[in-house]
Amino acid sequence: MPDLNDVAIFVRVVDHGGFAKVARELRVPTSTVSRAVARLEAALGTQLLVRSSRAVVPTAEGQRFHREVAPSVEVLRSASRGLGSTAHVPRGRLRVTAPNDLGASFLGGVVATFVARFPEVRVETILTTRTVGLVDEGIDVALRAAARLPDSSLVVRKVGDLELELYAAPAHIARHGLPAGIEDLAAHPKVLFRAEENRTTWRLTDGTREETLQVEGAISSDDHLLLQAAVLAGAGVGLLPGISAAADVAAGRLVRLLPEWSGRGVSLFFVHAPMAKVPARITAFRDLVVDAFARISGLNASRRPRP
Image (tube, rainbow, N blue to C red; front, top):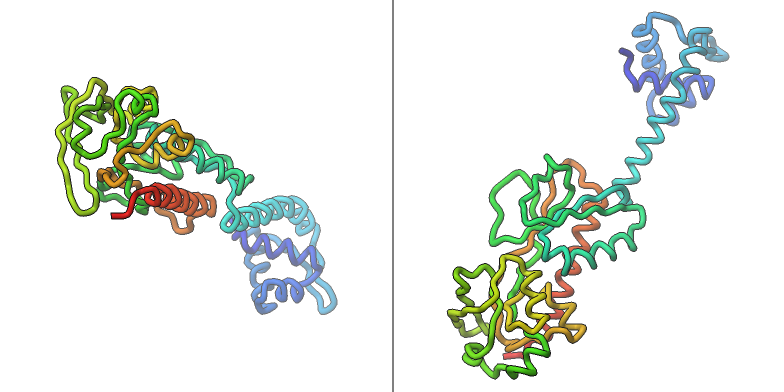
């Protein structure tokens, strides 16, 4: 098989009618161009060019070879230019996986902003509680919520901490009133995350003190979306991720209770497979995720009373 670089140089020589101009374009000595054509002739076992002091002319075999390979060389050049530009401009398909509740409450808005900003990117989201194998399943990016991630070869960036906050619907508050202190929560119905026999522990802090509450409730689930829907329906007080509840708070559908108190949730991580050159669509999406999380977290923090 001939060297494809030698084939590309031969095509340039024929197109330009000589070695000198090709050498200037490639910024190499003329002898380098001449040797490339000589290697190609040796590999093919035929003379492709007739060289003279005045011109370089393709032989009949050279004309035929040029005619057959020149279109393919141009296709390769075009493909290379396209890939080169992708390294700087986000484009192409981006496959993202995330937990179901995070997808509905946070990821949807981020994706909408991303495709509006980068219209040459097509985003496909896979929402699941399952830990998806990125390489095996062809996924570009994963958003994972966990206390910590196991060691692996994946590239991991911590986006931030998912704080838990107390929320209730206006309908619930109309029936039960606003709790004035942490002790008043005992009188309120509650919805619980991953409770055993409808009992669990809430660990809350106001920055200086910590309180551990043994709580029980009629509704328990392992899905924050279901719990948030139950809280929205007025079923009780819920300890929910602030990033998930932010939109409902802004719209007046939820009210944050005892805003000086919060609980520590898990962390949010941005994960992708290791690669020598990370595509622009991944780095741009990562930056947008980090910025959006910081903005929402900062908005929630600004609503807390100062100690």
